[in-house]
Image 1 (cartoon, helix red, strand yellow):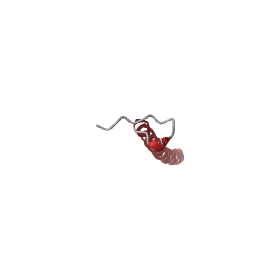
Image 2 (cartoon, rainbow, N blue to C red):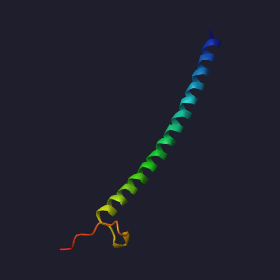
Image 3 (cartoon, one colour):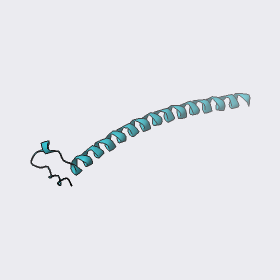
Amino acid sequence: MKAKLEERLEALKTEYASGQKMLAEIDTRRATLTQTMLRIEGAMQVLKEMLEHPSPEAGPDATPRPPAS
């Protein structure tokens, strides 16, 4: 009986270690994805601002700015 319990305990320890490793990998992937999404969000914000306020250097496709009041 004791041998079976020790065997089961070792199996659970192995499973637990595997779960910890998977969780660490998921945490790393989440952090990487979060950083990527922040960069994308920043790029989207820059593009939105450029569309709302085009600069004169933007070329012929630029939308003219309304006159200042």
